[in-house]
Amino acid sequence: MSINIKFPIDAARLKDRAVLTPIIKYVIPTFIIATSVLAGVYVTMLFLSFNENEPGITTTCDIQLSFRIDCLPGLVAIYGDCMDAGCCWDESDKFCYHTLPSVHTYQAVKHENYW
Image (cartoon, rainbow, N blue to C red):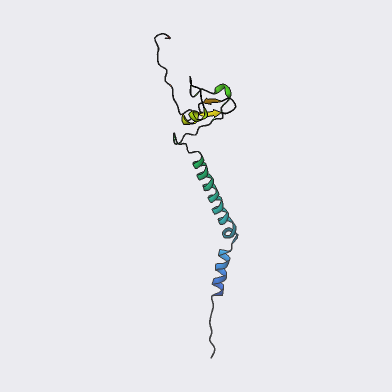
């Protein structure tokens, strides 16, 4: 008495061929890795550009000397006071100046002796 067992060899080979195609082996993993890297870069940039004062506004202290505006006019500025005011500090000039764009605003008031 012999037992005749049939294995689905052709079905297994077809499945292996479908799973091991170059598209499945290379393109899809590359796409997943690229998408993950781009998402990571986006989240990192979003985190680094976060500003506590104004969400959505990114400021800079990289301003030419001729465009710097005194942040604490009339006061002798020190580093701590400058940082507390949310301004930029230039260590070489000991100068406290506004960021660009500035989170501070000024309002002109009409003075009867001048206008």
